[in-house]
Length: 205
Image (tube, rainbow, N blue to C red):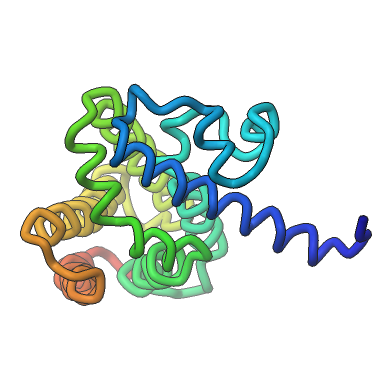
């Protein structure tokens, strides 16, 4: 058994990815409700009890990247650079928490499968709405604290317009069968359009 922390972390990352990909494959083949945690664990060659070291539940697998993206986004907002315009700050948030997050490549890979799955399972639709609302709420409060030149309404409008644009374009592209690269480019463009509007918000004094 190795004591190399880097090796252990890489092994954990591989197991986590295997669980995500294995679960989404089983959900597609068997159905979400019919797939058990034990079956998901078997796809990564781990014990059922070990599964819970990675995920608290089946639906946490479907939303595997939401927590890490939110934490990264809040961190970037909190560490706003002196005098940085709101639009520039939010562009950095998107670049690093959506496009540059460690889960980004995997999220693009499984995106179409995940979108179809959520659309077909009412429980996952409800979870998605809750997660999306919670993310926007936390980002709004983080932005309001970091940017005193914005009141709460302006912070909420900025977050809502940006998150809404990204969410809608991803759903639209995947509904039309766009390839991951096409969706990725469309998200970039939607981000640019939304941020152009945010540029009209007050600048720091």
